[in-house]
Structures are given as structure tokens and as C-alpha cells.
View 1: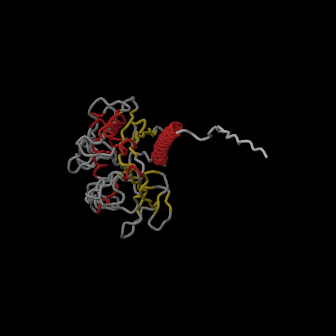
View 2 (view 1 turned 120 degrees about the vertical axis):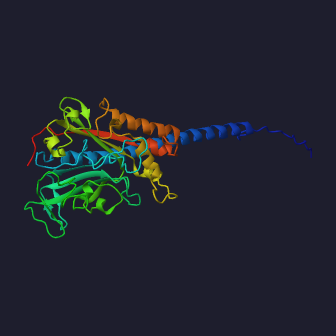
View 3 (view 1 turned 180 degrees about the vertical axis):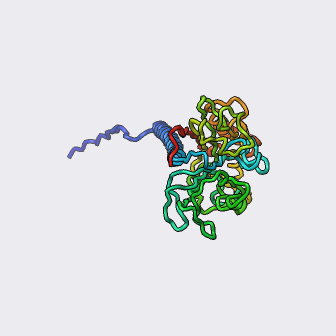
Length: 361
């Protein structure tokens, strides 16, 4: 039996696996793609977050300005009606209208206004009245109040029959100049309407008829567009014709020289406002926000006397410059820290409310 030697055949097989170099390149490319996607997602998140903040502030500003439009549009403009408005004698004392750029003791830094309007108000019993005392203010003094540095609105219902009970409640509809801001009499500083003209940390500033209409509005300023085309914080042409011996109502003459009332507000969204809360300063936990209020100057720093050559847009521009400065430096004008994210979220709004139409009522 013959045998043949077995032939050992070497079979060469091609390997299907990746080499180490190929694996390293793949991992590197994958890491680069993940980094690019994450950066894209972060950018989209930031844009979305900013957009949502702007939607929050836009929505609140629109609601507030629409409410003001209704109140101003139905304002009672008559010579026998009292007003609490910005004018040389419109505020109780020279310090009541802060002049911006760091407030001094007694200055509130925000405007106030009070007037009668043919809009529904409410009695304490809940019944509705056809005419009310309307007032707007930013709560600038009650630092421990949940309404601190928030825009408030009063709509105090008035009775037609001129009768009031022993508690001055509800309030009579009696038009005699001097009711709202009277120095003496039943409507004086400690009277039933005292909160319409006071904004300090005393009992005379407290009134249950105040409601928070703008929880994120921390700055409120107004001035007048006169019928000669000028803008002033004295509602008369010319401002120097204001007679200091006469009442505000007598000088106003039912807003006869005023074309429109211009309102400017500063709004911050809730998330950004929370960045400004400082529990280490319990006496004023929103001191950082108050510093921004101080940097937003009043109407041409006029202090209620119409000083300077004011131009339309001056107030808005000044406030925007203050916001932009804080957003870029992280500080307010006095060097105090202010989160840049919060500053970037602040937005400024304005609207002109026409008062040319014939007075109602």
C-alpha cells in the first residue's frame, strides 16, 4: 500500500476587523460630532431661554399698557376734579420725585399718578361702581412686602349719592378740587385716599384696594406730549406759566394743553428677578434691583420742573444705556454687583396715551 505525503497548504485569510489607527480616527470623529451637536443644542437652548424671557416681559407689558389705555382713555377731565400728577406742585414735597443716579433719603425713584376715571371700581362689599379713583405706583418703600418693587394699581369704587358711613367706606362721589392730595380735611394724608398719594413704609401708604398689576415691573415714569409738539413734565404751555399760587386742577384746566400722556416702564422676567434676591440683606433683599432703579434717571433728571431740552426717546435711551452697562460690566453705576444674565433680560417699553378726545362723564 503506497502512501502519499500530505501536503500542508497554508491558507491566507483576509481579516475583517478595524485596525487600531482606524478605531482612533473613528472615535475622534465621533467625539467631534458629539461636541458640535452639544454646542448646537446649547446655543438653541440659550436662544429659546432668551426668547421665552422676552415673551414673558412682552406679555406683561402689553397687559399693563392696555389696562392703562383704558384708564387714561376714560379719565374724567373736568375743571372741578382734582388730580395727583407730575407738576411743579403735583407732589407733596421736592424729594417725592427722585431724580435718578442714586436716590437720597426720601426719594422714591418712581412716579405716581392718581385720577378719577369712568371705569368700574369695587366697594369693599364687592359691588361694582361706574366711577373709580385710579392710582398707579411702584411699591418703592415697603422692602419686606411681597409687592416691593412691583407695579400696583388702585381702583377704588365711588358712590353716586355722596354719602359715606362712619368708617369712610365706601367712598362718596364728590368732585371738589383738593380731594386726592388735600393738605387738610377728610381727604388729607391720613384720610381714606391717602395711599393714592403716599408711597412710604407707613400705614398711610397701605390700602387693600391696591392690586399688583405688574409683578415684574420695577420702574415707572411718565411725562406729557403737549399740543405744541414738545414733551415736558409740566402739563402746560409754556411750563413757566404754571401759577404756584393756584391748585393743580386750576393750572391743568382739564389737561387742555396736553396731547398725550407718555408712560415708560422697565420689566424683568421672573427667573431673572430671582437672581437679584439677596437673603443676606433681609432689610432690602432686592437691593440690587433698587440699584438699577437708581441708575435709570427720571425724565431728563428734571425733578418735576421741566428742566432741559427734552427729546422723545431720551428716557428710553437712558434706561437702555444703564441696562447695557450692567450687562457688560456686571455692576451698577456705584460698583455694586449685578448679574449680567439678569441685566440682559430687562426690557424697556413705552406708549403714548391720547387725551385729546372730549372728556367723558
